[in-house]
Length: 136
Image (tube, one colour):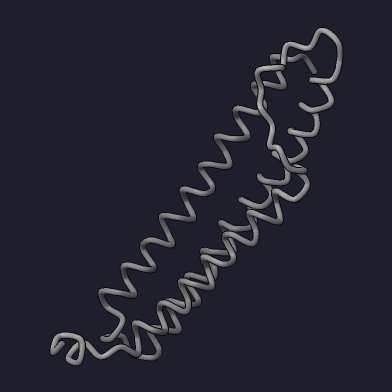
């Protein structure tokens, strides 16, 4: 693989990764806003439906994001190897200062934590009392 192809692959993989994160953050924001606005008014069945739908959405977005992060880690490993070769034109490509192999685990932990936080937030908003909050 030429240096140009490798640099292009880095760029496209980073674009794919950012698209995956944007998809997840959009759904997460929708869940948080919906929980805050309608939380106290939702019945138990609707809350369960929201949690099931959000769980399916999270699975559909977290797994591809982790896969993209794994591909990024492999590509960064290739870039590190190519940069060490004499005459390499990839010196301008910066790679993470840490071991790229932990990147998929980092993305998985970050997105799973955000998912769990959204579920807890939904439950807290469901249990809040709007009248009590307005009186303060």
